Length: 399
Ligand code: FAD
Ligand code: SF4
Image (tube, rainbow, N blue to C red; front, side, top):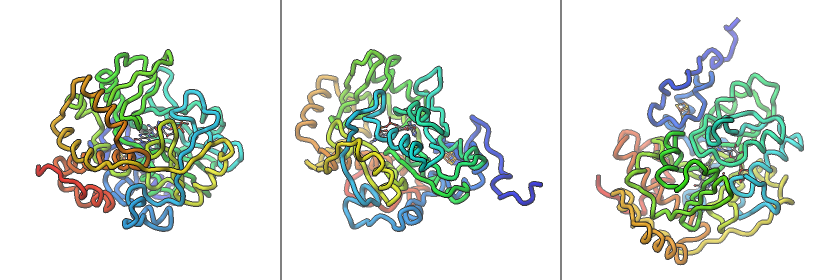
């Protein structure tokens, strides 16, 4: 009976908690929880970095490294700042992601949406689902700021009658998804991505909240905002802000997952449409339409959005260069100095796209150093060419 099955269907998914092929670099994307583990050596973002090949497959071309915006943000047709005229209560920002996904189901463009709800006991414990109804998408709104095995539902997709699917996910999940896309038996796959950085395991998240917030158990939502502060929203609706420069870097150095310390796909290069915030003014979301499929998805909700062109102000380079040794030495400022520094940087610091470049530069230089020190044998193949060019702009410590 099993003789004519595609090879992957004979493969065995790994049991929860067992060591993954990418070992400590595994981001728990979920692929290895399915029989698609058969393709892991080729598909895993941490075993086989192949962003340029997959860009060509997805967008019909790779990013143009000589175009300064594509070097940073990847292949795109259009970029804008947007917000919902009527924001969705409880969404991470204004709920553009959930709205697009719900409209795609309502209009019959897709029969299912891969998204992440949370467990009953824990608002931050991710539970990936295939949503068939808009209410199930709505129940998945807001970030679960932890590694999430989104691709663990792929086996169910292939076994279902779904032919048109939307997947919502972060860069490492989408890299693996693109690598197995043709094996899923779909007619159309739509991908709605978010940028992603500094993700953590569930226990790492607890440590981060306990080290940084005054009331870790009541946090319902948090974000590293463009005003150089982390905004924690609590159950009672109050907002607590902590300046980036006041983070207890010395205690938090090992809190981020090794996968995220070695990731260079901050802007989700392989999604059709990306919805984040970091290239937009404070309070607005940032949208990158990468290809025609992404354009169709955005068109569905344009009448529910206010939009404005993206802008760019300031010069990030000095701030990035200064932050490299400070982070490396785990410097933590006293809170009064951190607040003062935050206020000054907010006034004169990078804004709009320049803020996005600031964040990309800071993370790529940090991650390049991490890889060089911990996985020197991976440095050449794991760092994409665009990231090497970005990192080359800065002077890094010798060792
Ligand atoms: P909502 O309508 O609230 O929908 C959120 C969607 O995210 C849901 O559909 C859910 O399925 C999905 N989701 C939730 N948690 C996860 C997860 N762990 N993995 C995969 N999918 C998930 N944007 C930036 O511009 N810069 C950043 O540095 C940045 N870091 C991020 C880090 C993480 C871990 C995540 C998940 C997102 C990050 N984003 C970042 C994206 C940003 O925070 C918002 O998610 C995005 O702008 C969409 O907001 P929204 O209100 O439209 O989303
Ligand atoms: Fe498997 Fe995904 Fe982990 Fe890679 S990151 S080892 S594909 S679960």
